[in-house]
Length: 319
Length: 319
Image 1 (spheres, each protein chain N blue to C red):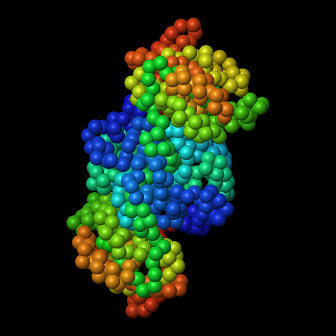
Image 2: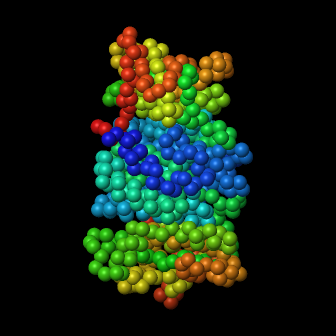
Image 3: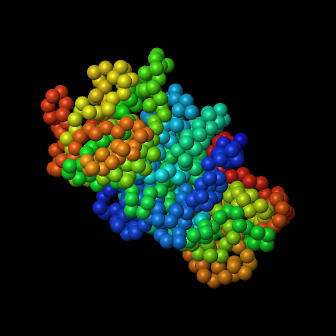
């Protein structure tokens, strides 16, 4: 089977029902480009992400887990903009044909895409070391993209869900999970849940937002820098899961502060909006962890004292 | 230098002047997503392409050549849709930091982007075997994307420029060029010229279009299949460069028919429109090479007889 048949077989199946339900996507796979008509009064938001075997997932990762992790992490960028997902393209680099791998991958990709309301709009399949790039397209009301740059002094700093789980999962990849907690943490690593509906709702209330991909402190620092403000964070408020506490012991807080790839949202908003948001938001826990301050010296209250908040995220080229 | 500083240093330079001149791009690099406002009455067209070291370019390729080849081949998909280029994202996977490589690459990428009127809108930098994915965004008037599917019986089949040069260039990669012809063919391989302005003009006249990336017969076959028609092609009409004839000898025609990555446009149009187009088009040679016929048995007149036209393009997974 050649490249074209391969792509056709797995990604142009009529069962790929998401294609039919997308009014904006005028043309999908099969031409030189896909064609998208942005709905009236909407802006397009888009982002590209790459996962490389041995870097972003272990060689042993299943095709299913790779598919979920790939789309979950990519869609998280749409969530952070308060955007509604629409479509994506996939650049797939594979060492060889591997029909079984591709079947498992494509089945899970299609399932994940349907869950996130994303239509596969196009792609490229090439031969090479296993790597996958995804570009996601989403829509926001014109001028309403939720940026990193809007935080102001006095805003509350909040996060969705719990942090550090993915880092704990990363440490458990080598062997099968021994208990429910470990299974949960592995799931959090392999199948991050992008906070799409939270992002859509948060967009109405928040002044700034970022998704936690490099680690809370690193990502919050990006947000602060873009906004030209600083923050005071209370380490004791950081939401930690029971599974993390059980698995990480005394490392739990450190992992929550610096472990990457939780794909939760970190956002800022006025006290008034925080009260209003909490009344409407029921998807996942929201936790206030600090406040925005003026200047550029961010601090974190930890071990009974205020310490400088230093960004140490996941840096691909610093190793 | 960490990942963020690296990206910042090379791609957020104020000298990257293209960013300023793009009215549609409301937000570029530096947030979770880029934000694009599609101009009134326009559709967005987009396509993703990957180049892998050792597959799409030799290990010895210079960072400059890789940058030009990357953007040239990606933009060619916009040309084939008759679209006007707007912006692109870059997913860059690098084995290591290599500041010199990155400097040469980014400088040439910015230069190529300016030439093709593309703004770098976002990206992702990861560690891994050298590979580059680019997604290009372009605009067409609403409903006016030039597809592969519009060819009808009686249309003339045409191509831009000359074919087979890139294949000849591929055979010359091992050593420095010995003469002007070889230098020309290498240039055609490393720095394909996407037919943007031709595509924009052709869009007004053509019924269908595709860019020649897999080889003329393979790509024409895609167009024919999507249009539900066949073609009769005259092999003697295929445009061949002097350099190709000199370098390839008796292989010249075969390379023109099946060699990939020329990134010329192959398009169809009525005889009336063909006459009108020729009067207006002065960018590069246009050559009529055959006609569209009914049915599904395409033929090519070669060696003084009609033969079945069999697609044998570049197939990544058939080796």
